[in-house]
Length: 228
Image (cartoon, rainbow, N blue to C red; front, side):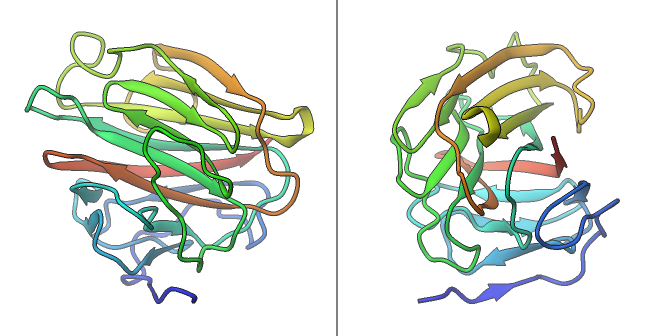
């Protein structure tokens, strides 16, 4: 059954936004108090999702159909996807687990699952597994550097930018992390070098964003995509 969707108002407009169907590049600001044009929010309660001046605020466990913040664009071919997220977990577990998911079923579908620490047949994702970056493909998972996304590498309350390259033309999905708030140019210190897996989508796919935090909230304040 299709999900009900709520745009949560106009929000801050995206800049240089391409037409539906992908192409070009687009930047999205999540600090305007609602989902920006080009994104919609899927119904559900896990995680919770609200918007304020800091960004999109995700709360609690990501269970089931958890990729709630969804682009209304569709994509085909090679793209770079980026999000900016804050590392501020003060409980000691450093589980500010932001994720970017690419799905081969439309954004109105009801099975955009977080699926922690496992592969899923309809999803290719980059996710932070507590302080460790991961790629979760459809058939394999690849771990990044352990104990990375925490002090001293990332000071508490600092921002990182996650970079996901999905390149069907070379059958490669890649993930890296840089220090910095909305580091779209990748000019900040690269604390996670590119890790790669061989799973990609050959046809149309869709883009979603979420977070999992067992002990509190996680903020994402912006997102970007670019045709490669």
